[in-house]
Image (cartoon, rainbow, N blue to C red; front, side, top):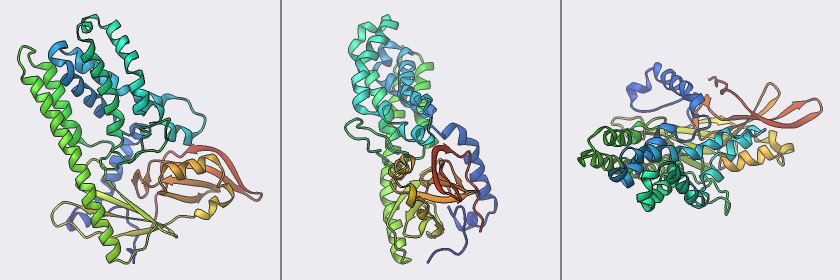
Amino acid sequence: MYGNQVKVIQVLSPSLLSTPKLTEILHLALANRRDSLNNTPMDSITQFALGASVGEAVLGRKAGNRAPLIGGIIATLPDLDSFIPWNDAVATFTYHRSASHSLLVLTAVTPLFTWLVLKLQPPLRAFRQRTFWLIFLAFITHPLLDAFTVYGTQLFWPITDYPVSGSTIFIVDPAYTLWLLIGFMTAMVASREKVLGHRINTAGLILSSVYLGWTVVAKVIVDQKAEAALSAQNITFERFMTTPAPFNTAVWRIIGRDDDGYFDGFYSFLPDSAPIRFNHYPSDDGLLNTISEHWPVQRLLWFTHGFYRVSLQGGDILITDLRMGLEANYRFIFKVAETSVLGTVPVTSTQLPQAPFLEN
């Protein structure tokens, strides 16, 4: 029913599938990005670029380079919650993108930040209404973009803490960010006496938005392909999801859960790509039986939408978020308990620095 070998990744085309270095290259790329991505679900460059482009679109023609700079700075503020010193790793992981990313909270604080910006930048007082809209749009586009990633964004906190997770775009996707960078940077260096730079910025916003729309269409297609492949291979499952592979939307990862553990496979839009093949891996969910009421356990099972792995390593009970990373290179692994002759002991959760490498 499943592939006999435990493989890390099967993507693109048959020729690449036979390339031994493919896995090594992809895992090295992920490892090099690990530290900067651990607590930043959409990278700061992208968020700054989006805010700057929005700022230019709203006020660039009237306020010049102040507009994109203010928009970029405002757009990065919600991620400052990453610096809150929680004393529990799961709390740090799951409280990020909660209140600071709530559309309700950001709307409520927009007047305060508008007042602050106008106080610090007197020339903008002639454009009070546009300054308000610049700050409002720079704020809310941040969590809205985050909601397209797989991490989970609590858009409507405190009414609900449900983490919205579109999983249509990877946290770093050059095909989305590049147009924004070209747009606002061109506007900043071009002559303000002409509209060319401003129009290029508008074009960048349109192209990036079209690409974001494509990611939604792509996900619908991949969902259908994955469901058909699961049915054709007689694979039963409790749930499955799809998410883009790192840095692109041409290759997608499929993750599923069943009674015995979890499985994954890859689908590619590229020509001559191999058919979807699923590989199965164990998850020792029984390890959680005596600690099911432990807060980090409950929180992780909820936050991952059920896509998790439970494992025992050196006497430590670990829970892994299967949605982010690749097999043998998951970024979010948490120790939630220890085992001893006395039984299972819940502990304050800690995050492991990296995933242990799975063997065949």
